Image (cartoon, rainbow, N blue to C red; front, side):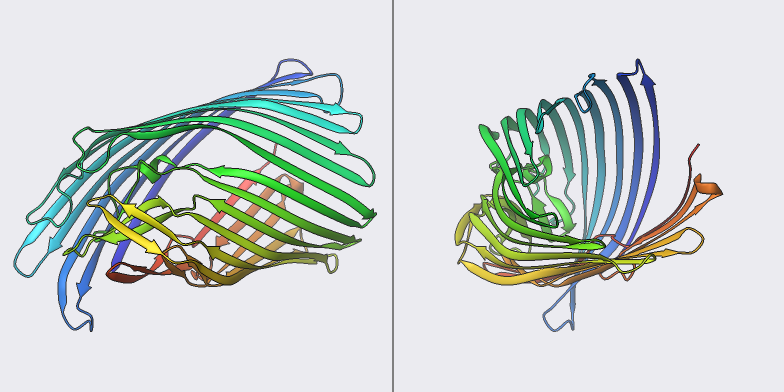
Length: 486
């Protein structure tokens, strides 16, 4: 496969800070961005021993992403230190305008498929946060309200003898309303700390589908759910602390997760949404111990995570076709139980280092799901277990003439996923910063994934097929900049 991708970005932002009084402040900000992506490539398909090319797909993508964001933030400080009221309103509009041109070259004919997609996203967020200091701690509360609306429209012009779904077009509208209330209490004494919070959210999601769609119908869900969190800490001494944590969180489906229109990683591996997809809920328990000394600390933790309704893409095929349809499903329950250790040490005035080691046992329960698009297809998996982990290393160098260098690296061991395996991954980042002009100016150079090694290799096994993919997510990037404070 050969691919050439050119991305052009234009970003403009402006803001205003106004101190109405010594206790009241107003901030107004806006941002505009425009991204243009041109993507060209070809994908040849061979027989098993790679001796004969059976077909060739050529693709061209022309995509514009335009976004505008405006925000207003008001803060009032009461007479008591730390007694604060914050209110904010944010509005974002984003347009996704995509055109895909797929040319299918076969030995006896050539076909050209054309897709055109427009999706407009409007998001309004209202937030109110209140903090009240107490004699031994503080009380926090607030409300959040989100309204999100995304109408999408797709046109499809199939070419000669197109192997793709000729009915993969139409319109669909995504609407989401989420009001939430939260309260959090923090109690602090010399040897004991308690933080207990509760967030209650109501979610109403409606996905309205073109009535003529050949597979999916309008769907959605609504719920009222509590999300508690608790942290208990006990100071064994001035340098040793024992902690216990519990949290419950939600991972709601995004619009792209339920979007009914196919998206092409490549012409014969399609991503399709699922309007019946439901949220994923995670409960996490953690027992931690921290020991500190003058130039560093050590932290270790034993944790257990339980995921209900694991959200993942499941691939199936239609009999007699080579096209694989990856569709989001709730694949039952999964668990992670592990041990994590973190150490940080300032070796001397110019060098410090920190390291993180994580080892865990991954368990995915047996599950059965049905992909409905383009025809019903059932996939079942047995219970799987695997031991995996990760290692992170960060180093910092303070050099003469106010120059700082930071190098970070991460290694992720192989692991299992609900329909296969994911290979090891490794990456190195570097950052260089030099302060000039008596501290008012700063020159910096950043590089992410400088070895271009963060490739994600997956082995997927389904009913009647298997494939191996190696994905690069444009993680290698270098940035040079200068900032000046006045």
